[in-house]
Length: 396
Image 1 (tube, rainbow, N blue to C red):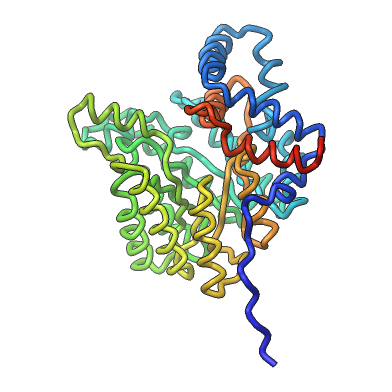
Image 2 (spheres, rainbow, N blue to C red):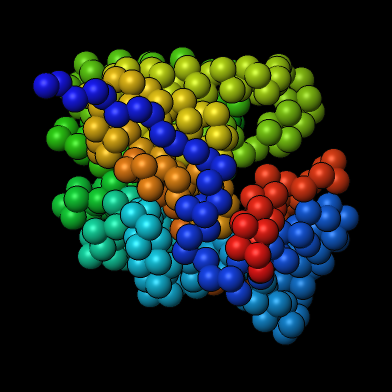
């Protein structure tokens, strides 16, 4: 007798699963924190004061951040601190993507330090079955002014050529270590005016290290009009070389900056004309990657419920193993637990991006997270609404 195929069952509104790892005390503290973040005026004021306090090294700042938003959105100040977070996530079958959160480095000593930290993260990942990926930013490994000159076809000085060579050496060392230890590297996307040389560098590393598995992944911001075409272009290039294409899909992180620069410099905005166009391209990218999952190893790195649901349904409908290593999901630690935990509970490859680093270095990252969760309409955010639902369900 042939057994009927199992029906598709996935519910992102299931808060019992979404917050199963949170005690009543932690859930109540989380609700309190998200209520504060849903006050746009308070967030705007706090963000400005926070940056000033960090610059002035005011003593109360570190303690205040450490006891509020830092544990919500970061795994710890060091790799060792992250182990508890990693283990806690894995209890719910959720994987970890480690991401050193320091930003804005430009001198060679600092750039070398970021590389060494990334190598340490790769080694730690290899010691954890639950940490398959380490994330890195190219602008953490080279001065971004050099990338901009390359994109503009400007001549580099001898010193700049040496610095770019150092970038290639740093990324090559990271990829070599990752390949050796069976870990993957996510290369973050950056501003469009420095992205072309990053794309080319990642493709060169892909040709060297993605022969048997996806060691290195590029990131595609699909709020840019060009990126769906770039995914197909880079996949075709990988196919010609007989290698696995590593593709991480995000919507994007620099929209206002991109539009303002385009207006100031008098060129057409590279950003999609509206949200629907972004959503359409993102979902088309998901469909393309799932359709070609034998030659593309992809990650849907999104907080959008519809896109995550689309990928999950496609996997199910095509009869692909839910935990196939080439099809992955990822959300930021501290956000969209309703997506991550329900995906993991249904057997999909679900992960959290766990940012870590000294508090003074991750403040810009934390400020972006609080601003994202601030409501512009005065309505409760999705995050807070779900947390409040679970508080009510538990009767606490």
